[in-house]
Amino acid sequence: MTTSTPGLSLPDLLSSPLRQAAVDHVLAAEERSVAHHSLRSYLFATKAADLRGLRSGVDYDDDTLFYATVLHDLGLSDEGEARPDRFEVAGADLAAEFLTGHGIAAEVVDTVWDAIALHTSPGITTRRGVVCDLTHVGTGLDFGHNADDITDEEAAVINDAFPRLDINTSIGRQIVEQAERNRGKAPHLSAADYFHHAIHGFDMGFVSRWGAA
Image (tube, rainbow, N blue to C red; front, side):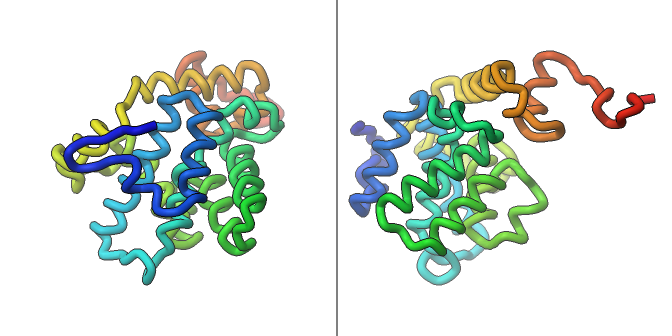
């Protein structure tokens, strides 16, 4: 894949063979819209770090952040769907296996696992370290969450480099399709459960064994 704009190109992100391998992996495993979302999430995460005054190599490790953001939606791949767990956990496991297979230290793998497993869990990621929180923030920024500090010009560079390809519809469809084939993919009150109920309606009967009344 060779995507470029006057301000950004994919080779700029590929500073190591493992980064290249990670990008190749998601491009092969995921729908292109999701792979682009993952790449944009890394760029938005680094923007968020800059806005917070966080320094790569001092406050966080940039390679670890790259792996966490770029690999964060592997749970939506075919291999992820084959796992019994919710997509965040399936993706975290697949990312951990990928990184372990490439000789990455267990401490880094654990950080990436936490970041991916918790990336849809606001209020928790702030307690689990900078990479975990930046992964949550970066993935959210790509959908416009808390994006007031990102200029239209900055967003345009990122979106032009890695086109959005109707990601809002695409990712929701994939999450819901997984849940419809395996309801265990959408445990109650999870992000997948939210997407499923947004399409099929909300049922509070699960709140108690005795019903919602």
